[in-house]
Image 1 (spheres, rainbow, N blue to C red):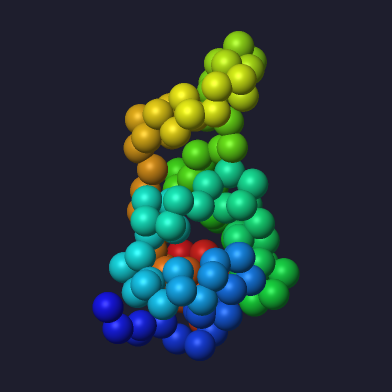
Image 2 (spheres, rainbow, N blue to C red):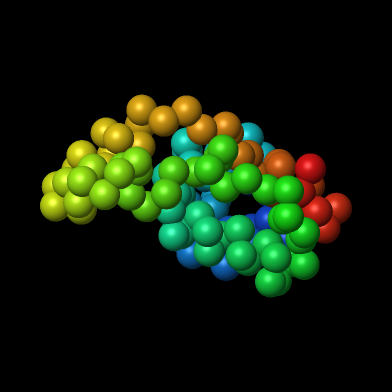
Length: 116
């Protein structure tokens, strides 16, 4: 698959901790959570890169619409169970309906300096 990402977007993904080989597999339609498996604290850190490095205003960004949190449980008991048996966290996260956050949309935010 040809890499159609801009230099800026490749730099962003590098800041998010993706390897060069993983970045080479991405295109504008690649989704942060659904395709790259980014969620929880890592997703929060990636969004912080947008604000700190690219000066993007994310005041209207709603994290929970695009990413599950690290522990998907809605109550303390569920969170403890997910912590004890990590593989169940994958199952719990797959049940959630999250909007796709594509790299095209990330690039628009970088260029527009705000979340739309």
